[in-house]
Amino acid sequence: MADNDSHRKLRIHALRYNPAKAGDTPRIQTYELEEAPGMTLFIALSEIREKQDPSLQFDFVCRAGICGSCGMMINGRPGLACRTVTKDLEADISLAPLPVFELIGDLSVNSGKWMRGMSEKLETWVHAQERALDLKRIEEPMDPALAEAVYELDRCIECGCCVASCGTARMREDFVGAVGLNKIARFRLDPRDKRTDADFYELVGDDNGVFGCMSLLACHDVCPKNLPLQTQIAFLRRKMVVQGTQG
Amino acid sequence: MDSTPNVIAGVGLADRPRKSRWPARMDLAQSLTGLALGLFMWGHMFFVSSILLGKDAMWTITKFFEGYFVLGTAYPGIVSVVVAVVFALVIVHAFLAMRKFPANYQQYRTFIGHRKLMAHEDTTLWWVQALTGFLLFFLAAVHLYQMMMHPGDIGPYQSGERIWSGGWGPLYIIMLLAVEFHGGIGLYRLAVKWGWFEGKDPNASRKRLKTLKWVLTAFFLALGVATFVAYAKIGYQIRDQKGAVYTPSWVVPNPMEKAK
Image (cartoon, rainbow over all chains, first blue to last red; front, side, top):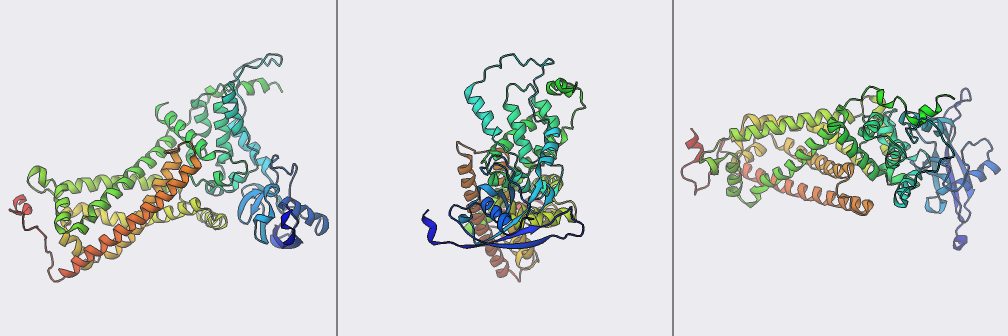
């Protein structure tokens, strides 16, 4: 590593609050540690928990930007701790839990609960319209380009960064967010899903769905997976307006 | 888990009551009225700024819209009709756009904090758009009502007098700022909202649209301020001639006289 010469002292200001502990109040706690080469926020937080404060709560599983557990507000913007290199930040780093989601404690939120609610509301699974399940049947072939397009949108890891960055989601709790709209776009592409635009309109054709989006595009700008949220939401909006005015 | 196959098959989906079509219509109408008003404002600014080419140019544009060059007589009433249509568009647009405003103090506080924390340009621009839109409820209403009721009071001298002696200067200058920011941001947002001009690389297109938006805002603000100053100057020069009406020397007979 070339940056051995600059071992900065990092000051991590983390929001501490445990809602399960009676009488606990939110506060900022500052941890100091020495920056290591190639250090990510995940490594820094792990070191703090190991050497300074075992009570600090935060989530991680994969350390590689795949599981979507370590989403948090980094200097005011949502991002994945495991994919954020401290070298790219100032020595003072402020961390807070993602808003919108239920707080478990400190930097840990229950995004899974929100995602499950959204998934059930938007029915984010393939609706095959076949009564009998036949697990031995060979799957229909899919055009590789289409499979690629479906996969592109399927890369979403449900980290919740888009929801936390969304002005609409912050103001209106029933808004399904870019994650929900992206899922509808994904299943709309999938030929195995027999739902039509009329069916999708029932799911996202209102102000909690695609028409609630105000196109602030923060979702698109913060998405750690660089999903094409701007174009997908615009596409879905056009389709739902056609459905809503002609269907 | 007897219901699993049914859930997978989506049984019952088609039997549910249909969702209202109004959210789609309202979303489309908000964008269409916004587009119409945004484009109108560009045209409006060009027509008003004709004063920079001289009093005769501005007079000609004014009389053109009063039908003088087609009908042979100036009918300011035509302007009233156009203003009424614009007024209606403003009311519909304001009514629809209001749905997006923070609806209570908690939402307001949340958004303010969110905007500050995120420091995200398009989020901040939306807030500017919401605030200027709110201002325009009042500014545009005053301006439009006055123009609808006194369409004949548009002209190099009358407009100049309004700014210098008539107390309309502050309204016009605040409205200029509000309209240019609101409209410029709004037209940019329309493009990204509906996916216009996406091209092969939507991220690069968005950057270009944003640059274009700022260039246009700067251009129209500069044009607007220059126009404002030009009218104020005329108003200053004729400050002692209350109710003066400008008619180019080459116009015989006076079109307003003929209308009476």
